[in-house]
Length: 485
Image (cartoon, rainbow, N blue to C red):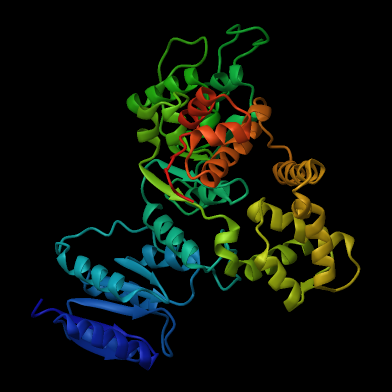
């Protein structure tokens, strides 16, 4: 590592000290400054093999400095760090040509690893960054496509920033209501295909026998009711992005045709014979465990690998509770755009929201904020109102789970939340079987845990034949550990 000099610019003396010591311990030479002017002078003098710069500095925005440095020393790698942890900050860092974006606070070992990687990249490395100016606010307030500054969201922002200028297929997974379509839309709106269409199709909302004609279009007379030629989603998304939402609900025949499109780059309409070339970026999304569906023979493994080039897993809202205050503020402000009065949430009520499990995730929170804005006269919402609202939707009767009436009531409340959070996007078919499976798996898992993996005892408790229980364990991919509690 000898001979490598790292230039650091950050107006926080504590951060400069920590980074200088960490880099010095592993053998790097370090020069640190508290302003952009000093860093710029060093760069002009030809100093440094790598730059680490903050965004907010007293004399210049670090992102603007990145642009200037890239013009005079394009080979010099730049790591941008910032406490302004939004998706747009990550995108702007990528746009200006930064090698890496690090949201504060960050892990020192991760930082040192990125420094090592940056110095090892060949000098003719192409940043392939986005057209400059794409994310300029023009002096206006920026509209954030995604909300949240938690560590989980920071990881997603960094991934999205690296993907914006690519055509790689992306698989977005996560529970219902976590914002999978928002992430797909951000990938399109801030990527190189943004001037063309973004088209979304929900596999669960379309009758299975119509999915192929919806995707690929159809010729006149191709089937009963096809009185004229129909345009498919691939044609509508040409040159742009196609979101295949709830891809786990795609029937086998359509999976086979989609795989051919991904392999050959062409398709035929239903009833057509002439191949049509296509140039569409594919983003898939699902709340299903696709690997489990593959084991069950319900999803093609080869299609999965074609779609899952870059996986993005969205965390449930309960796993990023620190983002709830910012989300609440955003949704309450959004409600005013619909003519509703501006509300605020007091601190005790906000703490209650942060401790709620949010089975409907961000969508449920958004619906609640709209309801509070519309139905309550007080300007400041207190904890009593929140408790009333959550009691109506959270299945609070689980306290009475000893009786079948209490359990039934609790399940009814959870299903009510499911239906209200999905709105018009309910699956066209198969909901009964899906709900049964979602209840069945945790029931069997918890029973096996309670019996320490004793399947005979578990089958007696469940009232199932032992062979039936074994079959369900295989079908549901449940791991059984003997002696575990």
